[in-house]
Length: 233
Image (cartoon, rainbow, N blue to C red; front, side, top):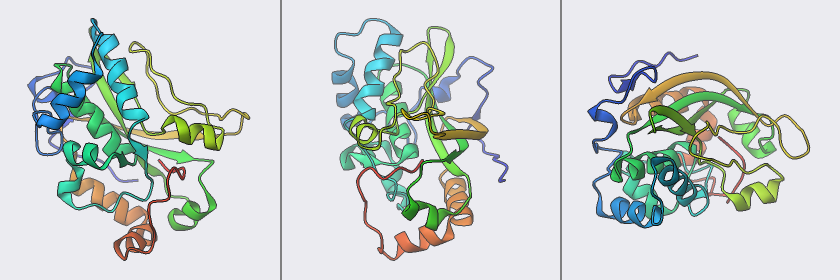
């Protein structure tokens, strides 16, 4: 396992500080596109919880889950760039959600965990082996407490692979389901690395290259395209 040490670490046992609301390099909450999309998404919502729910669904389904979209240059990890691409794996999609929340005044951070996807495709498993996936999710400060939500798998993908869509009510954690609709083991959380006010890009690159050298080298050489909705977290 890789121990995560980063200056942007945020303790979820404490109330949010200014860094959880401020825009930064990757969570560019002040970008016009992020602000416009977030403002439109929360139309009709009055409470923080209602706003968080609307933001979640504005990311979960419109942004397609793209498992092979992880070999990206630094600038492509900006929330505004991800929103423009309208696709991403779990970390980029969570970055968009965090940025949108900050854009409408909800303190938010990026959570990172190690997970195992027991239903990963054979193609993905061949390139990743048994290494735990580096999974990202969003964490909101809503009505006096931190709430986690993973916007990774869009509804059309869930229907295609018979996976339960992950619903979010704004009050309770919404992390990936342990079992699918057929009660097969699906997502197992192995280790939570905590939450961060900024995306630790260099650390993420290190983890991806050390754990998945075949996958990353394949993507670097453009030998794998983005197969829409293959399951990977």
